[in-house]
Length: 629
Image 1 (cartoon, one colour):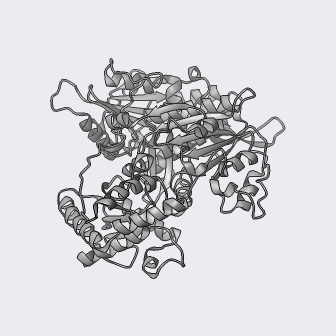
Image 2: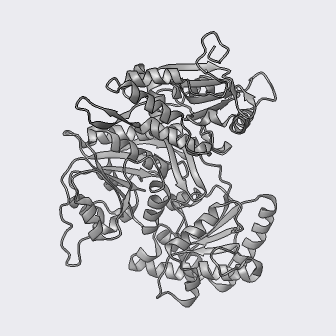
């Protein structure tokens, strides 16, 4: 029907994937103040390729789609004005042209027919590939493979594409055309957070994603392009991320209003389910919300390395934000950034809100209500919301709205977190994450390095483990420090570390022979990490290389020039740490094992890392964060 040989052709050749007549009519209708020449400019800009890369072209079209197409035209007084031509009416879905085409034929290197293509104003924004559920050999993975074939044979079909759906009738998944199979995920809800189990998966996905208003929202606010070390990356939000972000935006608007209590709520999404991306999507959407009046967003963490990770690896590379985020390197810089009329995305640590050297309280920075404070891992005791750094934050920003994200549940006895943030606004626990494939199942294997202790010492050790499990080495109270030191001396005894190193080497070599990937070793202290490293490379000298860009095993930790000489080879600047992190994430890099104390136990995502050797007392939130790596 739509092809060049159809009764009502809308394409001049089989190569065309954009229905330009529908697009022109829509642009003229949505932008009634633009003259015909400006409409033609917008259409020409859309159709004119600027790159040989399909993904780069996809990002270009997505930018024009969501940000508008700049066009020049003359106005009544004869002057030339630059305006934005909108390709889609984001506010009124009824003002758009909707079309779904079965067996849409496209010719490229070969002729292919995607099963269903969804057009909005002539732009093919959705592609659905189906396999016959009656065919015992048909699988949803086969549908994904078919999409990969289309990428090779008809790449033009993906230039405007926002989302791809693959299904075998029983299973249905959503993702980006450039995404790996692992990044295609189910969509299990229709019109809320309630998982639908009494309808076919494909029906749930189609109703949940392609309802017009929801589809436009997904395309505009939940597709992210990021400039990462491996190149340009495109991500499409999963269903739990979509609903959580929208719930957080709605809650923030309510809490910041005249009758709001400034408690935006807490999003509890289990470790590894994409919490950092949710924070990014939330920031992008809340910045555009007219109800917020160009808000200022302050993203708070409680450690410098977490601040660097969230800023440098998630927010800074992303192209979805209306303005570039900034990182406050000092108290003075933070105060300068916050002393502005509106707008801005500021990253900092909670410690920078401490009083100055004279002990004077933090000054009032602004009493605006459109300031949003996002706290990562909001439950952590380091924030000390009632009496510590966070109290100074509240003094500086008294009318800000507080929103918390956490990967672990808030303790039932934790009243201060609820007093600051409010209750949960969305929950995505480990059980659902495993069912959805957002996180993988965990298999625990006990491996003991036995040490000889008198009976009375064994009982004491149990108590000490309880005391130090949730306490960071540098920040412990004096009594816990003493107990920690005693336990550390036992765990880090030379004879025991010999056994641990030998066991890790033997176990890893056997595991690596059958399963390619990487491992993380978690030690109790920096000393133990360094000495464990020295024993491992003594057993396997070919794993050693002093160059951070080479070698199969590395220690990742913080420190200073005042640390012992044995620590110094493992202390690196930020650029070197980023390079080591890139190696750890690269499945083809020879770096096999990283040894850490607490760095990379949060905010570090490496799918190739499938094994963790824990030689440190851990429980609760700390353990959950570690195993999510």
